[in-house]
Length: 132
Image (cartoon, rainbow, N blue to C red; front, side, top):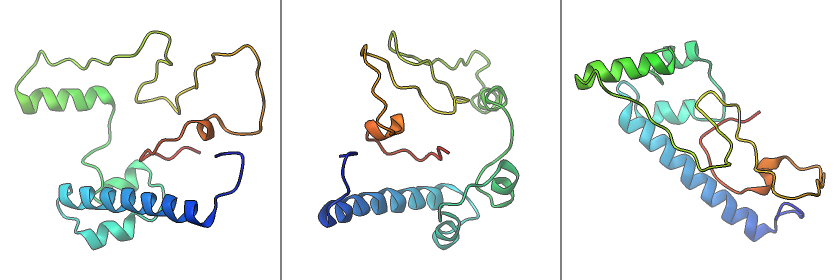
């Protein structure tokens, strides 16, 4: 509940879930990034945020560019010049995209209660994202 502190048991369960997500994240990166072993990934995956130049130097990304650059690379790799990227959204949902800072919560009531909470606090979910 966002309205009270964790109990010790809840904190332990929540931490276990976070640890599982983190370990899976580290494993996936280590398995799929050539030139990085699991120990190197563990050393990098400590909560720091890397800019694109740092990520490139650390072998965390293949290149720096725009979405259109990536689509063009995929077209060449797949030998499919007709490739299109299609996204779907439910009617009335926030029209997020890869450049969005964060999705906006849907407004559905007539009373705006300000509880001093960030909108994200009201919707529990796990993401491999950094949201300042």
